[in-house]
View 1 (tube, rainbow, N blue to C red):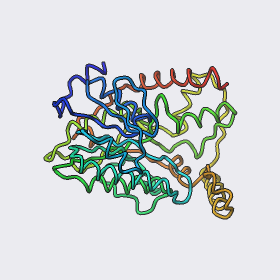
View 2: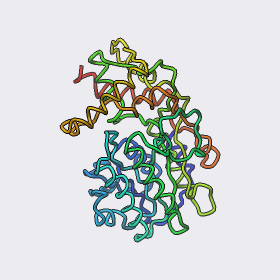
View 3: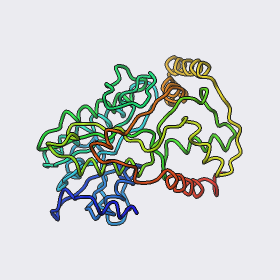
View 4: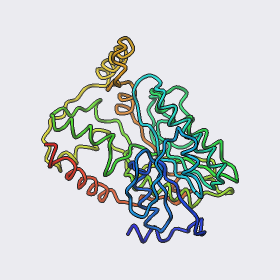
Length: 352
């Protein structure tokens, strides 16, 4: 089914030397994107901090903070998919977050211009418009947040703005803003949920009514491909951003319960009200700032965590549907089954 859909794509580059560079190709979205590109017969190069062992893909090892490594990886590249990022929602303004997410993106943009790259698709985030206020059926008309709850969201906004400003007939750019990405290989959401559930510590923040978008990694990757194929100087995607979601939003915590039930992880959900959680978050942030030794670790409960899970925080992919022709590549049921199979292999034999 997937191969059938991908075979219908019109390849924008037909020369033998056309190369697609995927930064962060060892990550969740990057791996899905590499797989889809290879399935349609593209030449793919992966730039990451560690070697990639993906069959039929070139591997370039390098750091986005190293302009020479970036330039080397960009040689002969026609299209860049910039998926690499430092996902760090800790407090303060960590220097490495700026250096990788903002300065690293600038290095890629500069290198892309020098190496005459034609297209640049940036993996952004829904956090670029989030200031803690509820968002319901959010669209791309929302402005960037005037204040951010963590530096990660701010860094993604700064990088996205740099990418979109760089749009030019010689280097066409656009941005994809995924919601909460999940799937096999997830290192940010499911591991924490599963670990807590196995310890009997699965906790719901808020009354369970707030809605949030989770989106399957392959569907995010598919939107990237559609954007690359559509991107042209006279197309509305040039210099534009798109929210990437797939199916109806659910409560953040309710999303995980079917997986826990299918894995036969018995757990009693503890409920903490938004007001109580916020009090704890403010105390956690206060202690983090007051005690220097706590700065070696992120405060786990922050205002960002409370607002993003206790208040509506969901978007519509309508613009991507209209301008990119997007519909989810993988069905909701198939996404569930694939993720569940990975969880069963990853967690049950060794972690229970």
